[in-house]
Length: 70
Image (cartoon, rainbow, N blue to C red; front, top):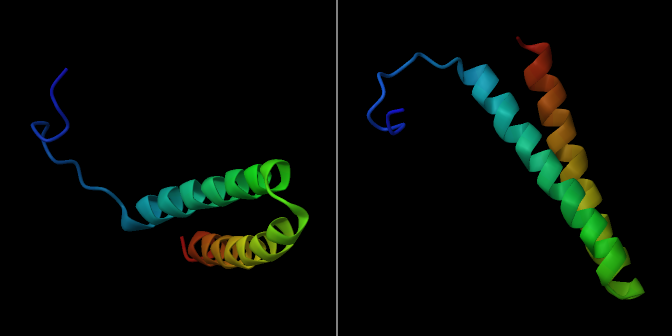
């Protein structure tokens, strides 16, 4: 198996790449919310959780808009 930099370039659809990046970001934010709920004090969980929920909403909307344009 060749290293990914040595392999022949394959045309990648930018929409699929955008969906992959947005999906990964959504999973990371969900993981951060889960960690925050389990580990943080209540004040930090409320303030940090609200910021993460807003960020998650923006990511989900971007994912849906990108999915609609395909």
